[in-house]
Image 1: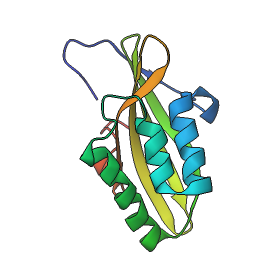
Image 2: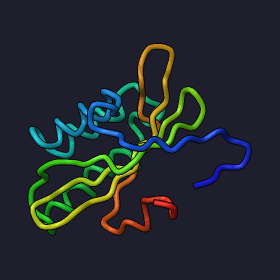
Image 3: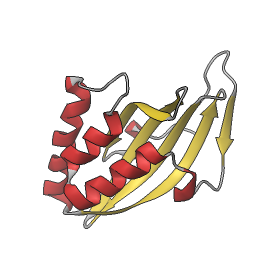
Length: 132
């Protein structure tokens, strides 16, 4: 993925320990309490807090569960550092019967990492950059 005029670094060997707390807390909440709680934690205090599009992601996650079964775990695919304060993380969310691909964009605010956008799709080409 190439952004004109932007410094960008692909981070290889990214693990769960490298994920910002905002992503990890939502993933744990998803496993323990379901999609509504996960989305609530992901968007808390972010620019997308309260947006209908962000809240609608909980419905998308429920629909995936209807087809793929229960959410079980996640794996980090890769990460990009875009400047000093912005990172993009690509993950696979593992369900009983198939994967869901995820993209999380986080921003280092003055106090902590916040989520500025996220997206899910069962088709990897809709989420992952072409070079992965």
